[in-house]
Length: 319
Image 1 (cartoon, rainbow, N blue to C red):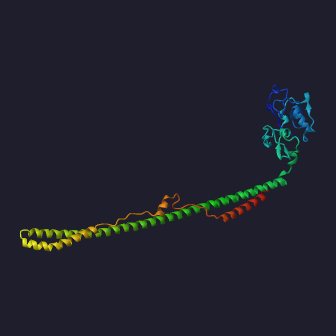
Image 2: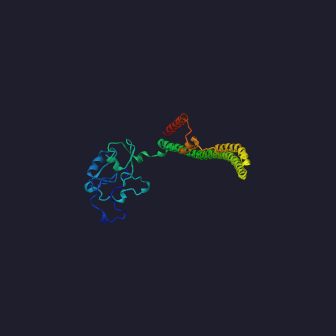
């Protein structure tokens, strides 16, 4: 077995007086070692020694015990090529050198003792020869290439969707602005029509009232003349009598004319009645327009089916 790095190692420049006589277990914290495996380059406590003897991968290793054990795990007993080492994520000072075929788990020596005692363990240097030419590696590279193509297609689709979305937003804004212009034009037209009607009503009423005013002024002039004539004849009884008799008919006619003016002295009353439909639009939160999805349920289901079919086809390629 290839050598594995140990714990509590002195530095390469350690002085002889820094070397301790009692070694701790390489796999356990603060537990005194009882044996040493020269093949694994590990100091083992009694419990780890027992497991070491049971593991199919290490049970044939001959252990050194007692005073024959090295009193220090010197740097010469371990690999110094750290650039080529993969460190175990569960045991930070251990190098990954094994593979559990049962759990498909990468292991260090500590992992084989703690988690994989009854598993079939492969020694990676024994099974990794020419791995780059093997089927598993080629299949992985093929899957990576497939994913690259899928990512490229996704990016193309996303770019196309962005262009389409930008174009759609511009088109819809133009439609909205055109609709807004139609509404403004309609309001301007209705404003002009209503103002024209109000003006026409005012002018008609004004003309009628002006005519009545002219008639009243004529009646007033006739009354003034009649009063002047009668006043001038007050000293002449005969002529006053005659003039009074003649004036009775005139006064009756003038009174009828005044009463007729009184009856006609009016204007057409009117008020602006707001259009109920327009008021409903103004009171609505979505008065002018709304945005709605235009894809029908049938088309949406068709698109979903296509996407599901393509997804399954791509998954099958990856697998």
